[in-house]
Length: 366
Ligand SMILES: [Zn+2]
Image 1: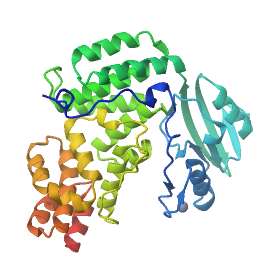
Image 2: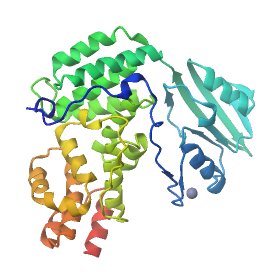
Image 3: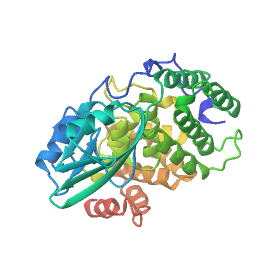
């Protein structure tokens, strides 16, 4: 029996996320500059700070707080003018035509279906950026979310429910990428739970979740942002998970993991009472759910779960999950004065590319 069928979760009436509200507006978290640690109460202010205080010599393009690189940026939710910023934009070419910054911003914000090729030039340096902008109809996105809400409201994730979702979403053609990403996510959950509802194997969840993330990443909606954050958490991309849906419980778990890994606090994060724009526990598979719950509790409480976490370490199949567990167990064991246990689990990460440094520091400090 998988997590969805156990009744372990409480199901509630659909919440505001299905109304089409865009993510990030209900509760605002402080955004932190990774370079200097200063905090800001909006991504726009943080971006301005980065441009002004940590300038780079080359021209740059920032959209929704993120600096664009070589890969194409997908935009599926209309951009506001304040969400686009340039640094060192001496010359701007938009699809081959030289334009002013304000005109480039206007064109990007008013388009609904367009690919943009943007070149920024500054004292002999030139950078090129690609934006793939396709804005679905709001009514189609809302329709998809109503169908998803119905599926999870049933408290049972099975093939029939997913087929029904796919069928209903045919009525919402402009949101096909959105519903397709959500369906991939659900199959990823079934694979992670080794559900008899699918022929997918456990290891297939990675491919399904990657496809889900690549289809959902451009949508600024609570549901897609939450699913992307869960996927990042599963893949141990904690900073990304925390940024993708800051006001979610999974983001709190991700911040807690980051603080354990960087060794700054070594404590769990207290979840703010207003975090829940979306109830992410409705969407998590059972292993992810357990990891989130262990990660968000304060260390004084987490020590009570050491035996339970050790037992889970033997059964969790994903190496990513066992890495998270090893960090949680080793750090809790130190707090509980159980040095042998701490050494045992920290040893698992000594040769890990992601957490080897953490393990080295851990052994120096205990
Ligand atoms: Zn800074």
